[in-house]
Length: 506
Image (cartoon, rainbow, N blue to C red; front, side):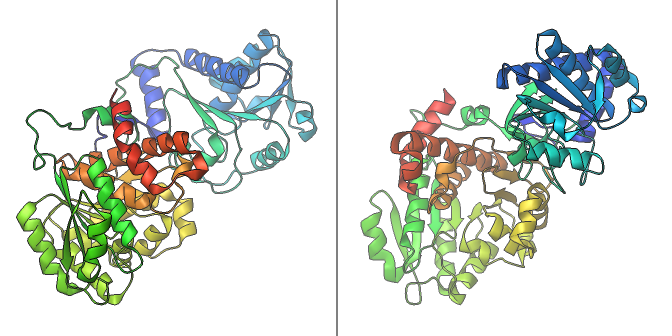
C-alpha cells in the first residue's frame, strides 16, 4: 500500500520506532538530542496551555518518562514550581531517560495522589506510543487518580492508555487537554475513541528530516487535495463536468433523494438525473428544478426489481456515477432493487443509507463489481454490514472500516467526527475537521451527493471520497458560522459547498 501524496502521513507506533532508529543509526543524530527537543516542545505546549502555576510531571519507565524529565527541567529553569513523580524506582531507568533523570534540578518522588493537589497543570509522561492494551499496575492507578483530579493534563506523545496506532482504548486512558506528539502525528490521535482523549494535538519537530524508510498506511486529509480537484474551464460543458444519477426516494422520504441530487449539482456535476418511483415522479418534478427525473416501475411509491433495467439503461445512455440508496426505504422490493442495481449496473457506484442495509450480511457480494464502489455507512450501518455491534465498531473504528473495505473490495467511508476513508489495500485517511453542526437529518444524503459528483468527474475513487468528506465538513462549518451551529439544516450545507471549495482551493 502507498499513501496518496495528498495525505499527511500518520506513522503507527512500529513505524515511528523505525524512524527513530533510522535517524539515530543511519543519520547519526544523537538520541539524546531527539529527547531534548521532544522535552522542549512538551514544555512549550504546557506553557502555552497554562502559563503560570505549579506543574506536576508524572513519569513512567522508558523514553516517555525521559521526555517528561526534560520538560520538568526546562519548566523549572523557566521559573515554574515543578514536582516530578515516578511510577518506578530510579534504578529502572536506563539510557537517555537515565541521563535526563540525573540532570533534574528537583528530586523525584514516588507517585502520591495527594501530590496533585494544588497543581495548575500536569504532564502525562507515563506510557508513550509503544504500549498496547489496558494499562497495567501501577500505571492504571495513576491514570485513574489523574483523571479524578481537577487538573488539566498535557500528554507526551500520546495520552497514556490510548493505542497510538489505532485509537483503541482497552481500559482507562488519560483525558488530556492537549497532546504534544513527537516528529509526526499518529493514527490513534485522530481516530475515536482515542481522539476523545487527546485534546488539542500539536506535532513537535524533533529534528528528524523527511525520508525515513517507512510507508505509513494512514494519513490526514488536508486542503492540498481540494486544490487538485478538476475545475470548470472555458471549454467545459455539462457533459465534461460529469453526470450523476441518484436512485432512491420512496413515499415519505422524497427529501433524501432530493438532497443528494441537489448536493451533486452544487458539488460540480454538470447534470443530475433522479431515478425515482414513478408514482412519486410529480413530487420530484416540483422539488427539483435543476435536476432531471425519470420514473421507474414501483409498488405503491417504492422501488422494485422491475425498475432495475431502466437504471442500467440510464447508465448506458449517459454514463457518469450512480448514487444508490438515499430515501430508498426498507420494503422487500426496494432492498431487492438495491441489490440488483449494485450487482449489474456497470458504473462507478456510491451506496448509502438503505442501499447499505440491503447488503447487510452479504458485503462480499460487492467484491465482484468491475466498476469502482464507494460505501458511506455510519457506525450502525457498518455494524449491520459486518454482522457485529455498533459498540464494537465504535471501539475499533480503524480496524472495522479497513475490514469492510477489504471484504467489499470498495472504498468505505465510516462517518463520524473522525470520518475515515479506507481502501481495500488498508490505506486509510482521516478527516481532522470537527463539524458538530452536521449532526442533523439529511447531511448524510448531502455527503453522498457530494462524493457522487466528484466520482463522476473521473478522479480516483479514494480521492473523490476523501475530498467529498472534507468539502462536506468545510461547508458545514461555513453554514454554522452563517446560521448558528445548532440551527444548520442539510440544505444550508448544500448552499455552502461552492464557497467551501473556493476557500479551500485558495
